[in-house]
Image (cartoon, rainbow, N blue to C red):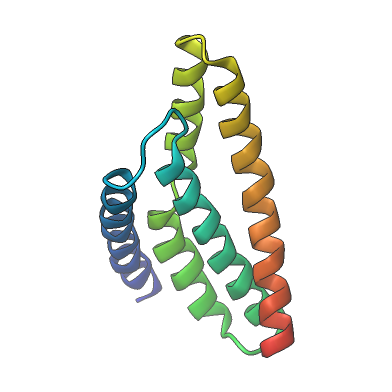
Length: 123
C-alpha cells in the first residue's frame, strides 16, 4: 500500500511542479532558472517541515515516507536544476551558473532547516 501511495503522490507532486513551473515562468524574465529554484526551495521547506514533524513524533513514519518521498520527490527537481546550471555555464554565463548552482544549494538547505525549525516550534 505504501508503494502505491508513494507512486500516486509522486504523480501529484510532478503535476504540481508542472503547474507551478509554468505559472512562474509566465511571470518572470531573465537569465536565472527562477521557477526551478523556487520549486526546489519550497519543496525543501516542506521536506524539512515533514522531517521536523517526524522527529517530534507528530507525524507517522509511513506518512513521512509517502509525503516526503512521494509528493516532494515528484515535486522537487534537482536534476533539472543541475542541467540548467550546466546549460548556463555552456552558454558562457558563468556568474549566472554560479548563482543558480550555489544559490539553489544554499537556499534549499536553509529552507529545509527552516522547515524543521517551524515544525519543531509548532508541533
